[in-house]
Length: 591
Image 1 (cartoon, rainbow, N blue to C red):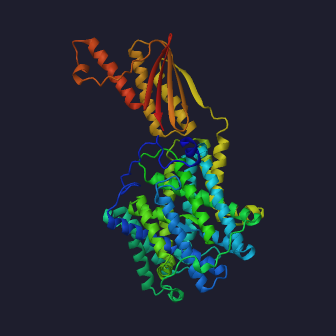
Image 2: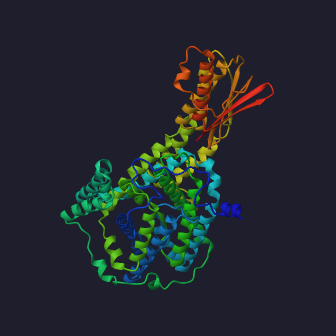
Image 3: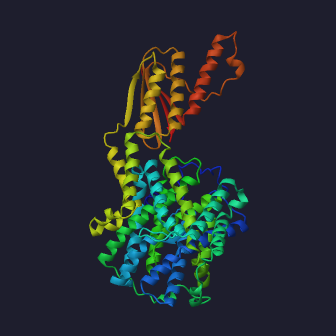
């Protein structure tokens, strides 16, 4: 029963995974408890930032022709689902990531939502959104089986493209310019620079107490700059909002209808949202674990499961769907606080704000340059994190072209939008997304370039230069398979020590070295004719035994024990076997 449940819904904790280690720059890790005051303050910061993006729901409501009262109800209902989605991701269970991932509506879904409502009706749009949520739930079941398609360089490309995608949205708000033209607004540039400068300054020079209020400080600095230039937005929209109102009730929702065309349209956009959620979850995983080695596909599956449940709620309420916010990942990096309990607090605050339309309305008035500054800060972090992830493993031509071509094609779609418009209509929405094109290219090239890769390298070592040949073979394997440099070096030290120990024990025949890699471990196998190398469980010898000049045999025995201890400590697993006249030493290094 448990095995069937684990296959259907990945458990909240992988029992075989090592415990998460908090990085040096992170003040509070994923499962850490915060003082109540700090927990409330951080929950407010994340909720306030999320409410800024509720503006997307207001834009969608206006595009669908809603009157002011319907717009208020629509925004409030969206905020309610944002809070529920944030709670789903923050809970440590099988249906969410168990991380601080804040849900916001997606700007990219606005044209799809508006077009579907105007041409197919709200009922069909609701049914299509629910179907998109069910698609995400189905996709989440497949993600743990796709680990080989998402090595660190592919995840790094996704993070780089996510950051690059944010640049356009950030620069548009920070400058007043757009792809269609416009006039550079000096006041907007000043406000965005004030916001970014404050966030970066606090991240570089600020202490723990200041980092906790980094977003608030940046927003205040940017807003004050806007106020000094007389460009604060009008508050007329607040007059149309009642003081207290139950969300959803003012929408007069129909029963969902399930039609093929709207479902197909939403399905295409849903793949983009799933990829965005996938990248956001793994970014948080990488950011919050100093021992991070590879993509946690179970975590990604739970994050996409939570996304699917949230989209079902978006569909039931007829509101603008979205996913986890990249801007909030930037806030986590700026504050150094990644505790999932902050997500619980933020979710509850958002749900409470849904009953108070003026609160959401006031925050929607946050100046655009301030939002632009926050997005640009987040973009800078995600691009640098992606590059770091790409370079975490040894590069070779296959890996270099996977990364380079994926970023080139993803960037080309953003720099030359006409490329996407030339595609068939059913593909245009996907091909106009630089994130989707870049990620899909990286996955496809990674799968293609795996063809022809040798799964094992094997060589009989020349006794005259066996240490050098062993190091060269391991280096070649590291480049071929993308093993981390640290793991290759550790394996080289252990194999070199083992070869020295075998020669010291009197071995004269050739030693054959075989190396293999399976994404989880780097295995080195030494085989030869002779006696198995005794590893045992002996402790390291005392220094006096090593320096004992009057008893050569005791000194040699101490040296053999020292070699065995060094080999065992360098390798995560080691075993010596004797099979007739043949012996074998297996050294395994976790990756």
